[in-house]
Length: 117
Image 1 (cartoon, rainbow, N blue to C red):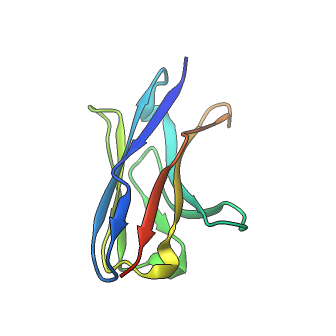
Image 2 (spheres, rainbow, N blue to C red):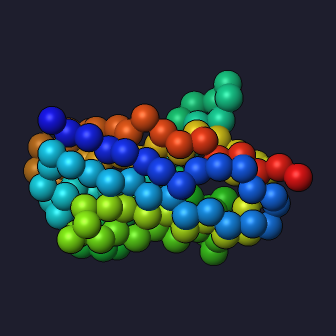
């Protein structure tokens, strides 16, 4: 059974930092493209950052220079380091795993990030 479990969310002041983690089980992690998406209230779920099986990362323009995605293929975990957080970063952040072979997607339940003073 595939499980993606996010952690690390919380309440932080503008300008602060958080590090999200997503621990994967039930998949061959090294064969998956991993991504972070976010969904604010009343909004659609949008891509934030992805990292390929080969370790190449891509970011949406609004987080470039502030967020860093990384992966640990030994711990089967993907991370999102978020710095210089802004109120508009407030959302539920979801981890996504996509098989590079089948294209199948899996989602975590999400972790809430709130940026507020």
